[in-house]
Image 1 (cartoon, rainbow, N blue to C red):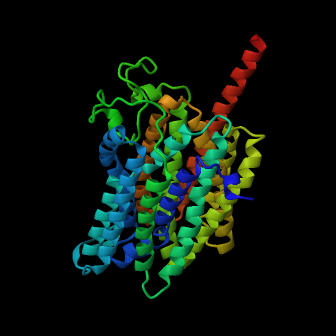
Image 2 (image 1 turned 120 degrees about the vertical axis):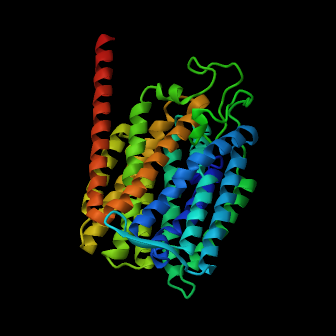
Amino acid sequence: MKLSTLIPSKIFPILLVNFIGILGYSIVVPILIFIVTDFGGNGFIYGILGAMYPFFQFIGAPILGNLSDKIGRKKVLVISQLGTFIAWLLFLLAFLLPETELWAQNTELTGSYAMTLPLILIFVARIFDGFTGGNVSVANAYLSDISTDEDRNANFGKMGASTSLGFVLGPAVAGLLASTMLGEVLPLLLAALISLIAIFVINTRLQENDPCIVDTSTLELKSFRRFFQVEHKDCYTEGQEVYGEKRITWRTIWKLPGIPLLYAVYFLTFLAFSLFYAGLPIYANTLLGWSATDLGLFLAYSSVVMICSQGPLLSFLTKAVSNELLIVLGSLLLALGFFLLSSASLWLIYLANTVFSIGNGIMWPSFLALLAKTGNKRNQGAIQGYGNSMGSMASMLGLVLGGLLFESISTQVFALGAFIFLVITLLMSGNFLIQRKALTLSDVDA
């Protein structure tokens, strides 16, 4: 069977761009904690470093948003990837600097760490990447624009699968490359090369999508909407009213039916996953004694399971089960996976990984598809952008908390993640029951 049969040509370029971007990022995931500790840091510094990217997205988003209104989503994606490429070069430069200690600290809250010159440059690299980052909401908005009601679920499932495929190859390759004589430098070189490839693919394969005419004369760079990650074209014309307002604002989007609940789920999901991504590398490095190769294989296995879940399993389930129920089921599995993850037994850890990955593969694409059904093409980009902002806020909080909490409560941080997904399960279950009751009452009245 040809690839074009499985993946329609209209969505293949954005899937390819997403895959390449995730591949470049995921290559560094298994080795970052080892780089931080080698240069004098600890779990606290690792958490703070992880929070730099989403924090500086807030600062860079207004500039990207203003540019995208004038030059389009495609060029914004190029700028974002170019920033990522420069950030990797700065990252590599850190290995050439002397490990000069700038200050050290040892407290009950932060643990023991030394801030060195290479660590400072790594922070600068992550800050720069965050400042020019934020292409996730652009890609999701682009995909939503070119999707129909009939293929939206399938398209977002494919987007999730392309993300997982990037996470399969990235950590596995990183683990293998990090075991060579060049150590962590070789994966970083490959990440920089992948960023260059992404720029080439965006320029040559991705077509600019213009769902409507855009007038930027009424936009204000300092508006509250611009503070968040709305780095896409807004679809309105001058003087046109959108839900009673002249432009799409945060308040406008918040009033849409179902949005408060969906944004709450968006925030809580990213909060729980940030605790996971902050805690797991520290757990692997300290308590489990894993190498970068061990952690890379663990993450690669997780992504293989997610690809299977987002592919045949999700395609089968969506024919018989609603998005709301799939989110509930996936959240329950995620809660169970988080709970089992704190075990010291290797087979239980991999069991937790399997359950966790199946839940993630079912839950997140279903959630994105449900979010994409909300509103219309005119405001879908804003919906995705503000949703991504909720994720960024949660990531900042979760990554810092994850590093701090692991220093004090160790693997119990994963139990906190399990509790968060139980809350999501209750929220979505309650909403589903309310909708079913309202539907039943409307049928009786009819």
